[in-house]
Image 1 (cartoon, rainbow over the protein chains, first blue to last red):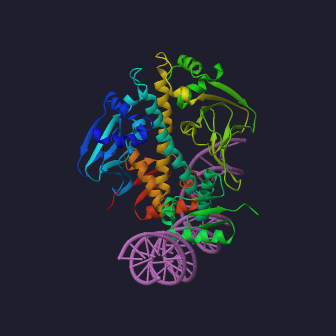
Image 2 (cartoon, protein in one colour):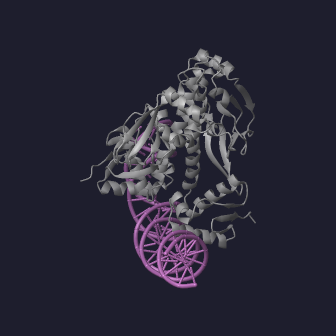
Image 3 (cartoon, rainbow over the protein chains, first blue to last red):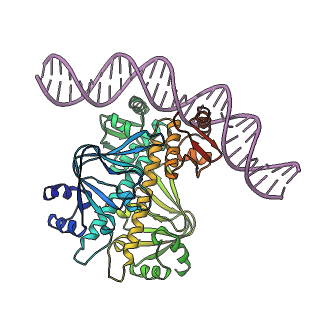
Length: 222
Length: 222
DNA sequence: TCATTTCGGTTGTTATTACAACATTTCGAA
DNA sequence: TTCGAAATGTTGTAATAACAACCGAAATGA
């Protein structure tokens, strides 16, 4: 377990917690580690979740199956990633996706109720843990809300302007870098890459914005 | 304040809390009520939020402005609605939307840190409050994730099947009712209503599904 | 009951997008 | 520097969607 301390320290759940405290906390939370071989179910769709998972080593895939059994990979779980928090918070709803190991894995499971319930005054760190958990979920919330706003626009042009406008406001400047290359941006907005490039050209030609590589400038209305 | 007890009881924040307890809690949390006239800022974009808001009476609009100053209404805040939770959790990030009263309003503000920090053993209800807050945010998270999965599909057909498949799995049956009429479903998926109807017809003709009003049946693969 | 409105489906036209194929630029490694 | 690979931009075409206009059925309510 000791060996995974660096991973734990970097995880969103334990940010701001001193290494020596983490040790005490794991005891207090009766955390349990479990080993998985490749291609085992870590969480099975339909389960009722009472623990959050924290990937210590190895990788897993979050997978969803539709009515006809077609599988979609929702995301990858890398070391240090917290997963299943949402369904741990909503323990009355069965989880609608599976987590399957993609290599040998060590996973730490933390009982959700123990995180919530303050045990003794000595465990003051509970507050911090709860804060981190809330931040983690709220952060994802924010990410999703933003992406949704862009994606709910009808045309590629509107999606682009919605995204770039948000980036501009976030950075509080009309000139800014974006963290995506063209293909990544296209994937993020669920559009075609070449159509994206094309629309960018048009926007530039019309004087609505200008760009060079990943650096964009939005123009004030004339 | 007394008059608003029914509203508070119905709010997601106080579910599971006894009416007499709510009274004590409000004191303990040093909740403060504020009155707004129509068209006043309840929360201003760029603010750093440290309290969650709970609408007691009246309605407000959550509004966003883009780079060019174009306004979009994100949602409506009705009595009993909790708002600004996400940014209260992420207090280091300035809020990117404004809340503006759409009529005379009474709003209850609850200090976020006081909700998180357990004060005395007598205030055991903190745990419940935190649980409710987590559930609220996690619930929205789930809603957003689902919608995102449907919306990120490229064609209307794929969006529809993604949505219907999810509904089917949620209800654990291949025949189920959906809570939307055609226009609402189209709005939810950000597509055109007539195009939606059209695609439904085709899907039925192809024997992939059948429907009658809001009742749908998905067919097994032949 | 009848009148009216709302809702869902259909069709044709136009606009937008995806896709493929290819050109150009950029960048890093040999 | 030169070469090759990856990223980005451009263009044409086919597929798809939005939009408008319309019809009929169902719901509503006077």
